[in-house]
Length: 69
Image (tube, rainbow, N blue to C red; front, top):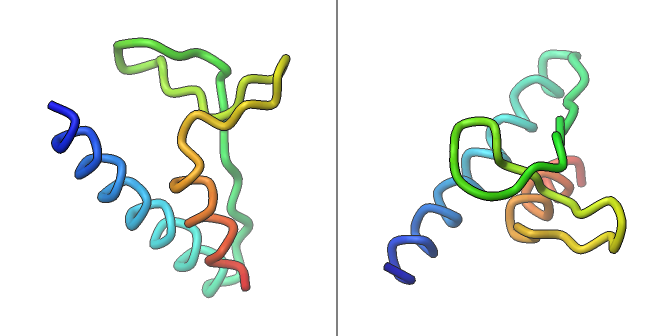
């Protein structure tokens, strides 16, 4: 199960980079919408804990940030 989770996060990191590069190349802004919810389900994909500033998925966030370099 851990390897599956790593593969999913790796896939999401690559997708995040693509989803950031293409709009910017076309002149659009790219925004990370974080609903601060974690857990299971479609609406629970928080990236950053706003109280502790802990980043749950740093590879995804870094992929997006690196796409602007």
